[in-house]
Image 1: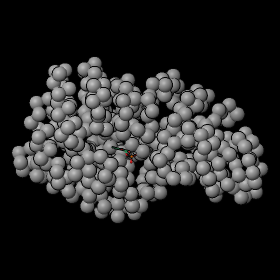
Image 2: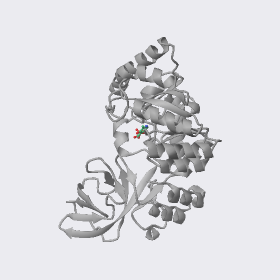
Image 3: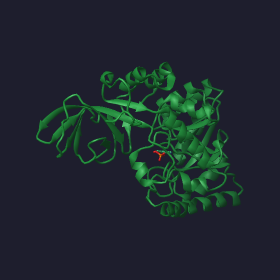
Image 4: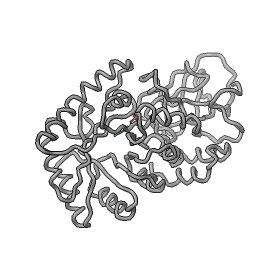
Length: 370
Ligand SMILES: Cc1ncc(COP(=O)(O)O)c(C=O)c1O
């Protein structure tokens, strides 16, 4: 491979694979693009789930972003350690998680916390737990406007919201709407679908206000619906994948200004039969809920991905080549990345001296819970 390729790193012979490389200049470009699209950094509450890195959070904080969304208690701890202003735990807590949430809230009074709720049982539980500790809880009502993953449907949400508003231990923050099911690759179609699904939410807000309730804010969307939601007023925006970007999202949103900012490295470790090549990139290092192919190997774009088995990725590749055992290959993530084997990323970043803040990055990886 030519030296000029943007993803190529120095000292390839020191790289222990599988490895993750992140490219700060590209991440910075992505953050600036996020701010440009949203029109105001204060509208952004980016999700940390796809990067889970303190260094990436810090880069966003340097550009004025102060509030973040997370999905696990490990990510919540990571955000606390960054000293962010506000953390939204964007998963409805069970009793055990709510106890942890309240503990974190009591201990870190310099940070404000919020979380989601979509049913009365949880609401009453949260109220009781908060009352027992003489605390209040900031809650967003999680709305299901079509994804059918979590949330209350808009037709039932007004009654629920009004009940929530009168609970003494609860502060109503507004609505949380995640519409990750909206993915048409044509921008016009995506805008249309997003607006159609949002109509019931707009009606819900009006119903609540007509009943004397107040919806101080609403948090909308992930990356594919980021642009459509950015065209609204008075909403917050919560993309996450925009930070590192990936091939899958690039295919959905071709015009997006985001650059791929994370690349994996793997080595050829075996050639078990004719035209079958095995790389050390199994699901124990890189997991995804998406079907194969989950990655694209530079130089083997035509390969047929046969499967991942523990530490192994097997592909079929028909074209003549001189691949040798031990050769290093760069890999583009397609979608739904979950990099489990992060220890290797630390090693690589130490070798490369990327971010210029290696010790902090190491700390990040070791402390995050995945
Ligand atoms: C609730 C929630 N908000 C925001 C995001 C970020 O979305 P995306 O990965 O499309 O940027 C996700 C990602 O899955 C999510 O689950």
